[in-house]
Image (cartoon, rainbow, N blue to C red; front, side, top):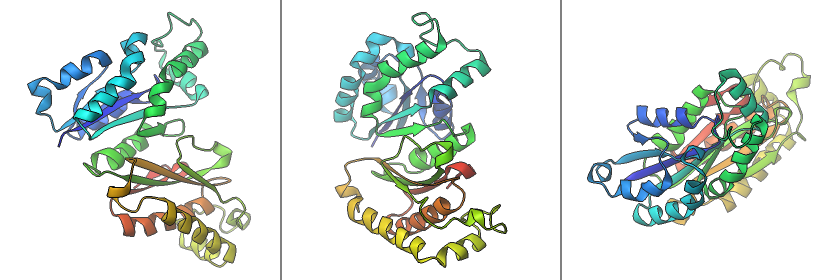
Length: 288
């Protein structure tokens, strides 16, 4: 069965790097394709023979192209059920910083002379695709290396699997992720940060694990979250209506409590669902 991955999103959010990552992992990649040409392209013999196909569609194809894109993708899904739309985005401040550092010209610079206005206009025009996306990835706090590892784990290594579940820890002081399907706040739990000998460690270290496991509230929180997810998450591909799901666990700094809870959830559901369960610690720059 052919797999099609459509990469879209905001300019400066990492779309080109995403395509390069997929290309390095065996995908036949085409960038900056006007969406009106997509159906004709898929009808060609050469493209039909490609088992793994990745296509970049974004604002560079023009406004008119974007207007028709959601309907075109719906028709493509009818022909190729294993079609995934991946949408990359980042905060305004981050996108502005990236453009200022590279000194590249924004695709909408001719319509909005100020960079902030061009980014805001692009965000508005891209909203329909963002809403239809199977997987939304916020790259605001993600290095290109971490993005590459995440794409490999969620798309390349998953292959034709129907469901990819990612557990990620984060720190609220670095902003909550905006690409979560479920978000749990564990800041109410006892904090090992205030224990001098534990402050520099993380929730993956034995000393932190032992300290947190000595508190009943920590275990009750883990059990409550685990029971909730066990009840509400799809238990098999046959009942899953989504290709991707992201569960985020947050504490203050994203290094102790959230890391510990996220590790335990990952281990529990990986044993249950297999290799399509992924682990990410955002503040530790760790993906598995």
